[in-house]
Amino acid sequence: MSNQQIQKVKVKRLAHVGLWTADVVAQARFYRQVMGFDLRALASGSAERDALSEDANLFLALGDEYHCLGLFNDVRPVSSNGRRPAPRLPLHHLSFEVDTDAELAALAARLQMANVQLTLEPRDGDADLGDTLWFQDPDGNRIEISVASDEFQHFGVSLKQGQRFRPLALQHVALQTLHLEAMVDFYTEALGFDVSDWLLRECVWLRCNSDHHTIMFIQGQPGIDHLGYSLVEGTELLRWADHLARHQTKLLWGPGRHGAGNDLFLRFADVDGIHIELSAELQQYYDQDVTIPPRLWHTRTSAHNLWGTLPTWLQEKVGV
Image (cartoon, rainbow, N blue to C red; front, side, top):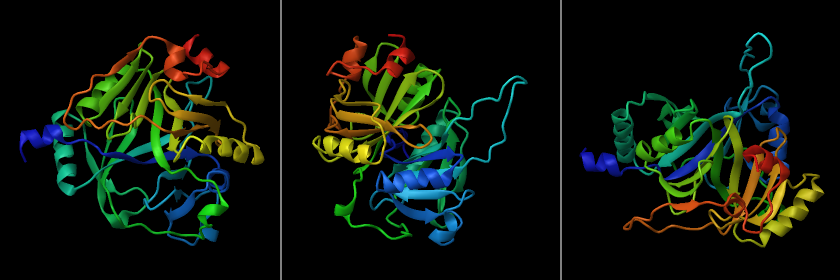
C-alpha cells in the first residue's frame, strides 16, 4: 500500500448514529410513528413483539441501508462529583463507511500514522457481518468505520410509502465541542474531511462527499446539537410542518434557509429532546479534481438563516 493511497483515502458517508436513551420504547415509537422509520434489526435476534421492551437495543432504517439509527438502553452508571450527578451525553457512537476493504485498510494506516489507538470489534447491530474499525475522536466520541454492505435484515411490517411521512436519508450530525480546532484538525487530517464553511470561531461545516456537510462542529458544552435528515424537495417542509402538528410535535425553528449550505430547513425534537433537522436543497460540491477553499462567514445570523430569524435558545447559546 503506497503512501499516496493512504493520504488520499477518506470516509465516504455517514452510515448511522447511535443514541443512548432511558426509554427505548418511547424513542422507537416516535421514530417509527412520527418519522416513518422501519425496524431493521434487533440486537438480541428476538422477534419484534418481544424486543420492544425497556432493555432492548433497537436499530431503525429509512431505506435499503442496514440501519441509520441505533437506540441503546442507557445502563451507564451515574457518576457524581459529590454534589450533583455528572451529565450523561446522549451520543453512543457515530458510524462512517468506506467502499472497499482496501480503503478500510488504508484508512487504518492513516489513523495509525496519526497515533490513533484502533481496535477491531463486532459490527454495530450484527456481529455476523464481520468486525469493523473502532476508535475515539479528540472529544472521546466513539467512532466506527465499516465497509458498506449490501446485506441487511428487515424485521417488522412496513407500511406503504404513500401512507406515511419519512425523510429520504440520514444527512448530517452536528456536535458541540469545547475543542473546536482540535476536532476540525482530526476529522480533516485523519479522516479526510474537507472544510466547506467557517463561522468566526463558533461553527464549522465539513464534507466527505458531494453534500455541503456531513458533520458540523459548534463551540460549546459537549453534546449533540442536532441530527439532520434530507428531504427530496423544499415543498415537503410545509407538509412536514402539518404532519408534525398532527402528532403534537412543535416546531422549534423554521422553515428557514441556512446561509452555510443554502438548504431549506425546519427543526423539532424527539422524545429525549434531541433536535432533529429536516433539510432540502443542500448545496452540492463536485470538486474531485479542483480545490475549493472554505468560505468564511462573519455574520452569525446570515450563516444560520438567510431569512433573518434566530430562535431564542440559539441566541442564548451563542451570546447574541
